[in-house]
Image (cartoon, rainbow, N blue to C red):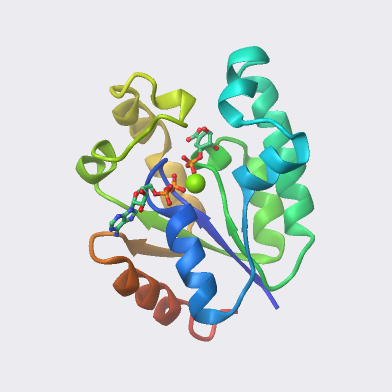
Length: 164
Ligand SMILES: Nc1ncnc2c1ncn2[C@@H]1O[C@H](COP(=O)(O)OP(=O)(O)O)[C@@H](O)[C@H]1O
Ligand SMILES: O=C(O)C1=C[C@@H](OP(=O)(O)O)[C@@H](O)[C@H](O)C1
Ligand SMILES: [Mg+2]
C-alpha cells in the first residue's frame, strides 16, 4: 500500500487535514515535524535558533527517509520538504504526493508562533515565490484548500481513487 504525502506552504493545512484524512480512511498519520521533535526530544524552533536551518534540514531528510520506509500511512511534511529534491525522490518511491494549495491570504491569518521562518510575517510571500513551482512540479495531485476541512478531506479521497 502506498503512502499519501501532503506537501504545501506552512499553514496550508497539512497537519490538520492529514489528521482528519487519517480518521476518514483509517490510515495512520505521521506528521514529519512531530516525528522529528519526538525523536530529537526538542522543538523545531529551538533547533532553528541554536543550530540553524541547515541542521534542521539534515534532520528533516533523515526522518523523511525513516517515514518513507513505512507503507500505507499519511505523511504530513513540513512546508520546506520540497527544498531538497532528495526528499521528494525518497517520498515518491512509495508515495502519492498531494499538494494542498491554500490562498496566501488565508495562510496569513493563522497563528505562526511555532514557525521560526514566519517570525517575520512578510516571509510568507517570499517562501511562496521560492516554492510554488516546486509544489506544483512535485505534486501527483493538487487539491485546493478553500472550504471546510471535511469537504477538503472528501476532495482528497476522491482525487486519490484508483491511485493508491
Ligand atoms: N480549510 C480550513 N478551514 C479552517 N482552518 C483551516 C483550514 N485549513 C487549515 N486550517 C487551519 O490552519 C492552521 C494551520 O494548519 P496546519 O495543519 O498546522 O498547517 P501545516 O501543517 O500545513 O503547516 C490550523 O489552525 C488549521 O486548523
Ligand atoms: O516551511 C518551512 O520551511 C517549515 C515549515 C514547518 O512545518 P509546517 O509547514 O507544518 O508549518 C516546519 O517544518 C519548519 O518550521 C520549517
Ligand atoms: Mg504541519
